[in-house]
Length: 151
Image (tube, rainbow, N blue to C red; front, side, top):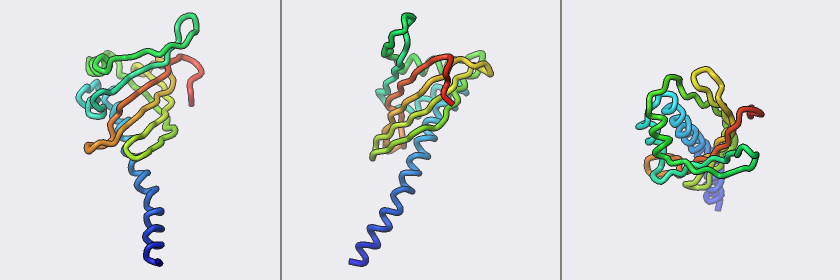
């Protein structure tokens, strides 16, 4: 009985360490996406996306109504991989990361710059899945605005 108690205690104490490793790996996956954007490297970008990734945006029409917009992943990948005059630099703040087995979500406020010039800000929300090749992004939705930026 004593051995069972000790084994259970050790597992309970070790669980947070495994979660932290996953959180670090999730952060690395998302950071790689932004490194790819800064470099204009579509191959690096594809390396963190799962097949079938979905992109959406919560947008605001001119009349102020909210709308859900769908974006084609290949269009985003092509835009990132096309040379630009200015570096695409999205600067995020790490928010909440939640993990349940092979599924994770991450909430990251951001500010986006073209070169050194501020462009827009908002929030990115990611869904990721753990694969045999590590964490892959399966879904991204964001908001975009030019004022009231998150810190």
